[in-house]
Amino acid sequence: MAALPDTHTHNAERGEHALLSLNPEDAAAYSAAYPGRLFSAGIHPWESYESEANEDERFATLRRVLSLEGAAAVGETGLDKLRGPSMEIQERRFRRQAELGEELGLPLVIHLVKAQERLLALRSELRPTQPWIIHGFRGKREQARQLAAAGLYISFGERFNSEALAAVPPGQRLAETDESPLPIADIRDAHERALRDINA
Image (cartoon, rainbow, N blue to C red; front, side):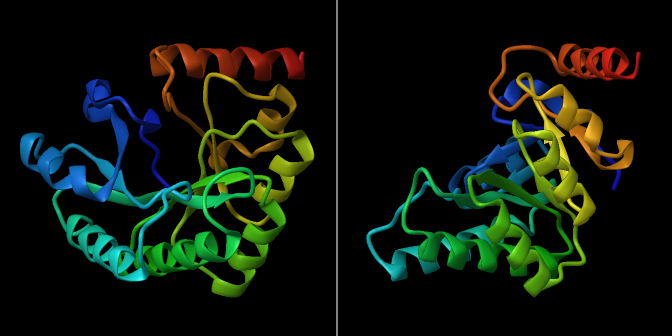
């Protein structure tokens, strides 16, 4: 998977070398204002709706914006055991977005909190052909090793575990700013320093 220098950000000022994460309702305006700039669009696991009909409307909007110029990934979607609606609802939405990614040939950007075993079970069940990317990974070495062994890409930001970073093969290791004010070059430099220190 070819990686942008910044694989996940919420800051539209990051420019053309970053993948901007948007909700479906904002993606159309962004695509029109910045033709060709890459973005991801998805329904975050924290979101809740008044009804299933409302959820269906949002998925219809998501499908439309993912056909626009610049749409490069689905998400962020995910599973979060600490926040958001029930895991049943989160899993249903995750499945729908994973299936949409497969249909459209787009990677899946994943927010993951305390639900790694369930995510790996879903991956085994769904058998995706498109890349799955864990964004903002802050977990431990063994968690990173397990995710990488299952074929996932792992994106690290400003805050990271050095041993986890080193456990991910270079071809599956990505970098992001997320909500950090630091430039992506500084974050990548911090990653490289950590790797040098571990290998010294």
